[in-house]
Amino acid sequence: MSELRNPAEIPDKVLSSDSHDVPNRRDFLTGLLAGAGALLSGCLQTTKPRIRAPFVGCEDAIMPMLYGEFRYRTGITLYRGYKENPNLYSFYKIQINKLSNELWRYPVDLRKLISSIELSDSQRTYQVKPRENMQRYPVVLSLYNINQIHYAVNQIKHQAEESEKSDIEIIERRYGCKISKEDIMDDKELSAKAIGEIRYELAKYPPDLIYKSKIKKIKITKADIVGYSYGGWISIDADKVSSQLHHEIAHEVYKSRRHAEWYLFLKHWVSLNEKGWHSYSKNFNCGQSPRPAGFISWYAKCHFLEDLAEISEGLFASIFQTEQICKEDPVVTKKVRMWKDELYRLTNGRIGPQYWEDLKAGKVNEEYWDKH
Image 1 (spheres, one colour):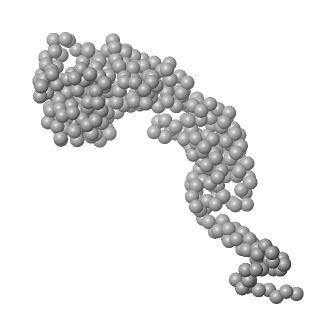
Image 2 (spheres, rainbow, N blue to C red):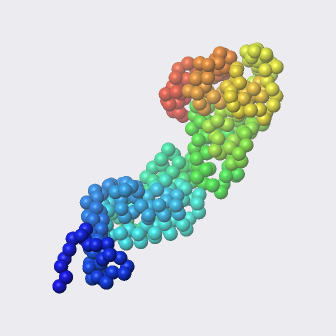
Image 3 (cartoon, rainbow, N blue to C red):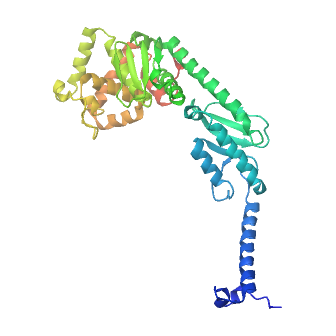
């Protein structure tokens, strides 16, 4: 019988390919592999399970590959709502792959409405939670009943359609303008997001100002172009609602006033520039950076009406950035003050000093106008 030796004491020739001491070589390699397996098994068993943690991280030795594949195929974040058992790896793999295959039956725009799926071993039925930021829906699903994802998707589809329909009805009833979304009908997520944003941004105005501006329709597109307005129609990019909507509303507010009244206003406005009317380039394809002195943006320098609309956009869409520009540019400060005074007059004081403080504090919404 050969003597059992410490592996560290085994000569190099014993482990070489031409060694004739095959039993000793085999014992060493077998022991090495067994030790590595025991070490890995011990690490897995001592890893503390995490509740509702993504299948990622060094401590999750089993799930990263499954998580990555699921996220890649569906675009949905998967969470664990149960204590992981390494002995059930095959079961997890079957269930997660099944869930991925079931989701692939649905179009991309419908899958995009799901923000995350939490797999639970304590819940025997599915649950669709309230939308996150009024856009996407988190889902809780039983680990043992993956097929219920179909019920969850159908519920999400119904809720999204009802929510979008509700937003459109509220906009039409509250502001008297219709929503046209024919250009984005094939993208349900983009449509719901854009309409929700329009409702949110319109709430920054008292309803009577929108009525007086005679805005009849807001058309949503997904072409990467600047917005425009004409005869009570506003067209905006679905991905640029916040900026373009306020810009075009300013144009419509201007157009709805009497010509003589606005001529005097604009004459005073232009006089704030260093060179008066000659300060405008009348070039709508002018540069982007750096910002020209006396103007809030390069586009504002193109025309005096764009100058006014850009100031209004800055106030309603990015007031903190606009205030920072005012600290650096006295001409922009005068224009901002002049437009605020005009809005105060047009709304009979409803958009006044307190309003701007409330807007910065995030207090302005649809209910705000019931009290002010």
